[in-house]
Length: 429
Image (cartoon, rainbow, N blue to C red):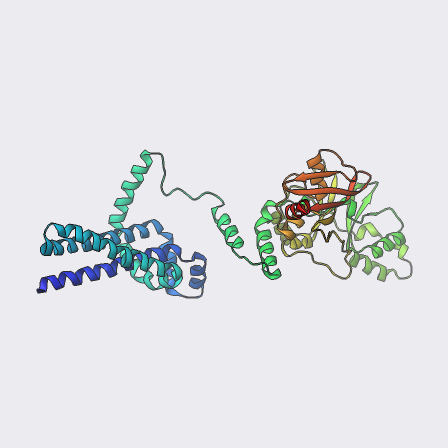
């Protein structure tokens, strides 16, 4: 071989290496974790900052990589064709096509991209400093090409570079949470908590509040001694006070404030002015989202709010603890009255109290029961049946079987829920 042939073969080899570098870098810089790069940048990693900068000009970066990759591939193929024509004549074109297709496919595409895919973050950090300059150097050409591409796409009604759809980032985050797989209790709880944080803006206080039927309220016109007895017997520290009728809330009495007055009037507690010790009630609409209410609690430095409907009627109360429980699950102390709520049965079904919320069931068992129009499981059954069902009545919804076990007046007290898997098993046995 003469020197020119050796130089040509060496040039082809170098161009194949460059092709592999461009291909692997493209995969690494597009597959690298943006969240991890951001974290590394905050920790002081300079290369991670460069990667983040390339992310911000992704269109220009990809254009520069593709331009460089095509340049080296075409040049390598041209050199190989010229070399083989000298050896085999016109048949060299066929040989060059076959050889270069195989070499480019294996060493210029599949091999580097496979490696970069499985080591995306590490490769991205290594190549980013060099590709920052390559992108800057080729930017005039890539911008011209992108201008032509945008103009061509507009002719067919497609806008390139438009803003991503609203909520795309949140959807990506939800997808990442679902990928946090595993049936271990800790992993399941982590998924539930992360989902709940994202759902705070979509859930209203009416879905997590304590209904007025379940809260303790005291008539402010009762004798102070009787009020003290009711507060002591209550498991709650904040008690709404009403006058005339239960929708007329005139204050919220804190047990600690009452205790101070009891101590001050040890000899005669009947002299305590209960209403003067009560805080001004804070009313919020039922449509308030949990995220907004959480921010309001923090700004006002309060933990207790009264929920009213559009007519101003009292619906229930919501506390800071209720919102935190929506994220982390039930928080109970030694004074809480903990309801049974849900009891698993040997046949795979569950006995559920009617006041248990649909969201709690969905979070606990990862079901997908609809909760748009009803907050509790009793409300869902009434919505499905479009009547107040009688005991023993059965309804089906999305494969779930609902059987009314007991009813107190117009209120569904206990419902048996059989999930689809258990219902199928029972039907086949």
